[in-house]
Image 1 (cartoon, one colour):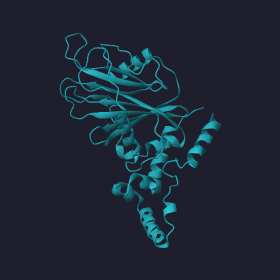
Image 2: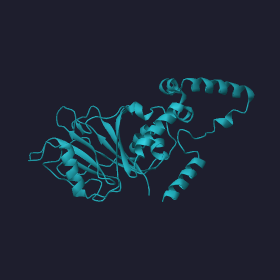
Image 3: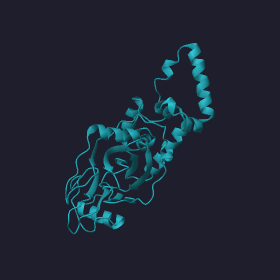
Length: 292
């Protein structure tokens, strides 16, 4: 499988999909002498101040910045080093504001490959997040998901022992790590509880857009009131694409692809307040790893 992975990487390079360091058609557009001099001057200016180019030139377009900026290449290398530190799999949790599509923060969870059962995943999430002690629903992604277990209870105003505030937890199906946990409140309050903090979005290279292909994705709308044991509606294709597009405007995909693979993704539309959530988010769970 190692040789196959390297062969695939070679194919991506030949197709121009190798991420921030890939060649583009910009070189072919500079065959006129005057244009070549102008382009050379612009490139020299960008090389002299790569950090400023990334932070202050979003008008240029993420594709150009991603494929010309040394700063973007450094971000890709940093992400790759963390994600490929061991043979195993990673889930990158990316919190995206659903209205503005701004990235709010991220967390990277990596571990050795290891299968887990639905019951074991639910118990681990319950232990690490403190959520789900009253009700033990089945995973809404299935008992043997290829991507992530997602356990969910909608907030409900019905009268029962386990009614009231809802919650959601998620566990990687490939390494068994808990990757997300949050309350869904009938009243006001802060919903997310796991992870306790997230890393700043700036670490992902916000203007380092990637041309890497997007993986298979599915998702669920967890907003609004529901019933005990109810299944949330699936997110439609445009919403799933919009959520991934926000992530693909960063260096994260190129960093994960550099020494591994991006397998699949799960998107959860989440709001801390069940009734008219003021700040809905897309919780993107991007799953990656090595194939050995």
